[in-house]
Image (cartoon, rainbow, N blue to C red; front, side, top):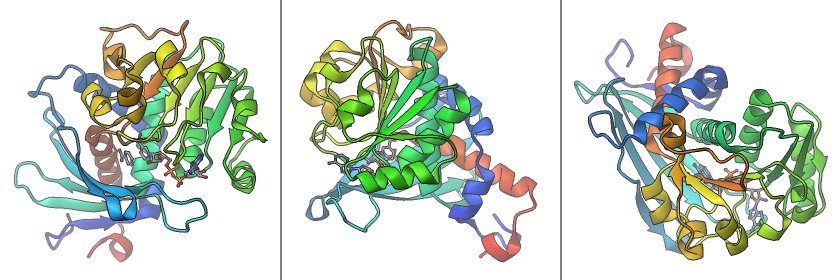
Length: 322
Ligand SMILES: NC(=O)C1=CN([C@@H]2O[C@H](COP(=O)(O)OP(=O)(O)OC[C@H]3O[C@@H](n4cnc5c(N)ncnc54)[C@H](O)[C@@H]3O)[C@@H](O)[C@H]2O)C=CC1
Ligand SMILES: O=C(O)C1=NCCCC1
């Protein structure tokens, strides 16, 4: 909130400057563990309310969360779409509101796109930390959009892969991705070529039909499945879903929203927070899938970090105050 008692506006560039993986990763890991205790005296986060925008092939998601001990009250509004190939419209747009839980005042209204990209990638990295093979040398990314970039950033910051491969529906997009990121990336001509032999595979596509097939996946590999966040959409085929040990960020969310889980009939073995808490094993020796749907607590932790950083840096009256 600014000196006039109005919410501060924190735009995309400022969120990108203020939110850092080194702060986000440890806080998010704690929050995922707290969530999986399923104790409403610690975390209150209903499964998001989803309003279908059938006419436009998309959804509006409302994602409130309250973290009791940290006293963080937040909600995100996110619109997401299954876009036609070549569409110039964004596939995800989001705004985050951070509240003062005591008064109910809105402290800050901030861009949600950078938060969505970074917290989703950070949660995938935390999941990989607990369930990827001990010797993980080859990282494969299917898709080359916003989530591909944030996943590349955090996975190469947190782990030491020897090779990173990317495949995208349009080869030019994969090539642009490879030239935009910091390190070396091998652009593959097919998803199969990118996947075969990889230790960690990240699916970050807008697909509604499978793009990753179990027969390509090396036994023991870890898959972070980030796209297909709707009951009718798929990224992974039945072969993979049936042979893998399946983890999710939220079991309830996955059973309501994940086409890969609902349509394959696969069971969620554990939430990633249960692995963090030590109440479920992180089967590194088996083929594992982490099904990510996204959670309000991930946005809440991120928004609090952004706001605290913004305050500690004295704000920027010219840019962020109304
Ligand atoms: N689990 C979570 O918390 C979150 C999941 N998502 C989901 O992650 C996915 C990627 O999101 P963004 O990177 O923001 O989107 P984006 O639009 O920036 O990138 C999408 C990528 O998927 C590719 N693609 C689109 N249709 C495809 C198809 N039929 N087959 C193969 N590739 C295809 C595009 O070429 C592009 O490389 C989306 O499905 C989105 O809904 C997004 C935010 C959070
Ligand atoms: O958690 C989120 O934010 C999203 N999840 C699924 C698709 C788009 C945004």
